[in-house]
Image (tube, rainbow, N blue to C red; front, side):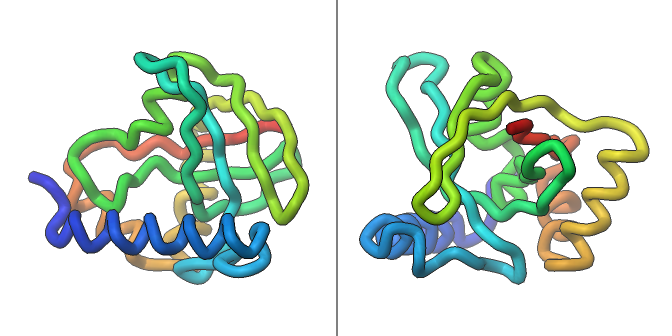
Length: 141
């Protein structure tokens, strides 16, 4: 089942990305109780660069993001792009870095999932609404 109010989410994401870009990442750098980074992937079909803003948690090897897609039953396109090509870039503030993405598993995954849910309980609601395994992804710098 698709996330209720999906169109409202899309408008909110679009507005957030616009504010982020116009301010050079100074505004909109935090959302839902967590900091935000911009992830740029290569489209698995188009070959074009695609950018999305994501909440993250710092990790000793980089940054961790959640492929929740706001509780949608489908994985987000950015995650499908990373599965096809795990090399990507991130931008924090004005700094860009290359990353290698990999899905976390086991206790490390569970511990980081709990940190996301503690910061914003909506993530647990997204898990329940989606009916799918939600990837927890390390963006290794």
